[in-house]
Image 1 (tube, one colour):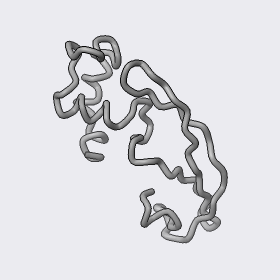
Image 2 (cartoon, one colour; image 1 turned 90 degrees about the horizontal axis):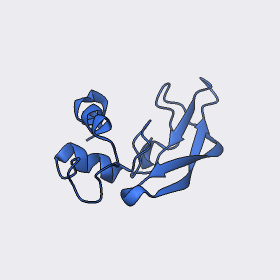
Image 3 (cartoon, rainbow, N blue to C red; image 1 turned 135 degrees about the vertical axis):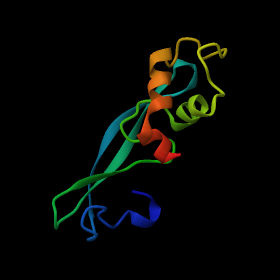
Image 4 (cartoon, rainbow, N blue to C red; image 1 turned 120 degrees about the vertical axis):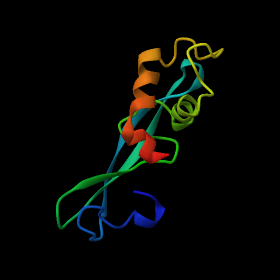
Length: 105
């Protein structure tokens, strides 16, 4: 849900209402983690709950979008200083082969 669709349900197209917010852990550069609050909206028609993710978070991913984009663009590899063990090489391979991540870029 981006800014122009915040009030519209992506499933049925009806207006949604603020429901609550939930904590989400985001992993960033340098093995840092931080917790952010993600707002959730509920559709009164279909009952669906939708999260309003900030631009720096991808759905279902723990790592910050900047780190994921760096891996997909080839700027971050397992040899990159500061990223040697974070994220792991298998995670980077999964990201590169993920069709869902390719669609988000």
